[in-house]
Length: 611
Image (cartoon, helix red, strand yellow):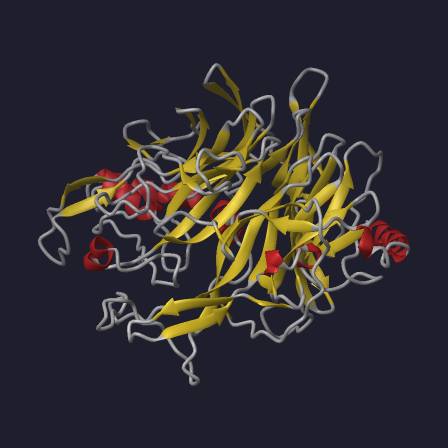
């Protein structure tokens, strides 16, 4: 298998040599959600925005994260414009004796917006949530959108709202109540104003002798939807062995907490990010018909022995209009129980209409792999993890499901041979255009900045999206003499001074591309940082305005924050070739981990599978 993979890499290297010098053929893109050199890229009252899916009608869905922490006087007086600088975030903690505060908010945006600002992120309520800018209500429901089809049906996940019960503890009481919720996250689809729940099959624990039960809620998530209203995702089908032990403790006499509260404590992540109650999780699809969803479990990549106590997981992450589903699953490679891995996979229906599992073959040097999307031609895109030049790297691959004895193909990126730059694809359209992200520097000892990429399968051409942008889309403005310089932003400080900093826009991830080549994803934009005190509140100057952090030269300290970005092929103009020596500043958010919540949990389960 490794030889086949290496052979595929060599063939690709030879093919790419012929197109390395054809960068001029790549399309020129412009960012279309810019307003006065700033991105309309997150909901009011939040710090970070991410676009995750776009349909053929130029409608997108996304997530805003990081509710800003502002004092009541700041908000009521209208002192702080959230677009001016980087304010501290609300500190979100997971504790049964503290009220639950949401920090994730779903939004929609579209080109033909009813307002005067196309692509303006617009809050979309799920499960009773209110906008993050509404300070009169404290949300306890986290909401997420991951995909949208051409009919405008949106899919994602949500948490249950907060519940509370009287705290009867006699010592160490920090609140009069205990706080809990009925489930940690659950798939949801929204068609117009109608919310369609996508529940998992396993939600309730029953002990071994059928004498006691506990409502757990389980978990599920919807990750993608096709134009036939088929939804892909994953769902809990049973509980893990260790999770079962923890629920039995909650049901036992040693537990002094109310049952629901004890269960909630076990479901919260601890300081290491792990959860005591974990689930056997499988890839899942739901068919939506007349606003009702019917679910089907997808087969796991292996058949566990009846006495096996390991926790096995699978996720469906993408699908095409033919109903072929892609994702990842635990599998015994080559049917060898000593080679348990989590690998990329696809599921397709057989002649009887039943879904069958298909492993995407990986060589021995690959530790794990994942598939994100598939187009109508059956081309799967994903990434695998392997050592390259002594370091674990993720590499973008594609795989043809229609080709007999197909092997994964690793396109070259910025060189004639395989580099050690990590890369991940997120979306492929029916023209074979792929978007994702790639590292951009070769320093092995430092964190590597990332950039969005566009890959053209038909030509093998691989481009950094930032190299395809017009100058205006990168934060430059044109002087009367035809020269370009970065736009200067002026902000007034709490000391009364007017401060300046340079506009900078850097596309760090492409997450979805439609058939017309419109790309949505995440960009970093430069913002100055507010000063804030030990309690996390913004420091206000004598003139009633916030104070900014300043460097030794008296200039504002800036950092990058993520924003939703929309790129469309430019009708005129050319790609910007201006180079400058602008300081890259600090990254407020490293990388492009927009789906960390969605993808991280199964990796935790894998590490703890023996429990």
